[in-house]
Image (cartoon, rainbow, N blue to C red; front, side, top):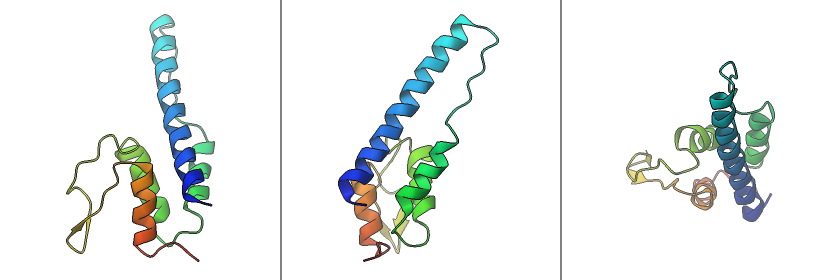
Length: 107
């Protein structure tokens, strides 16, 4: 997988999360008994596929980017460090660069 495909896939997931979240809020407002079930069984599969070709820990980094950092929107510099160096996960592009820089990209 190349960087463009990786970034596009994460941006598509972000859009999916935003749309399903908004639709769920609207349906919850219209129908009192409507329950929002976030995500889909395909999301973990997509994340696993995105981590293919990277070394150990890549899947966890991508999960963290998606769920904890809300696709980088909640990232704050200094919140992720390795060996005393800040790691920038503010965008999908920077996540890719970080995974490659860490030497976890298989050639």
